[in-house]
Image 1: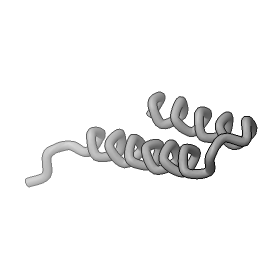
Image 2 (image 1 turned 120 degrees about the vertical axis):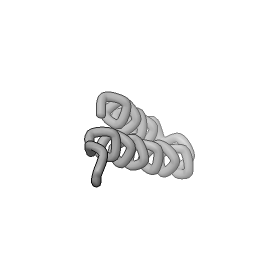
Image 3 (image 1 turned 90 degrees about the horizontal axis):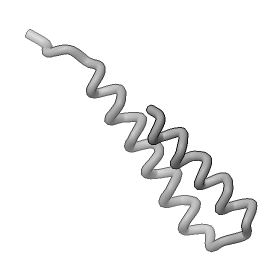
Length: 47
C-alpha cells in the first residue's frame, strides 16, 4: 500500500509540473494495480 501512495504522489506531482498527461495516467494506473495487489495479498487461502 505504501507503493500505491508513492505512485499516487508521483502522479499528482507530474500534473503540477505540467508534464505530459499520459505520464500521470500511467502512474495512477500503477497505483491502482498496487492497491489491488496489496488487497489480494491480504486474503488468506480459501477452502
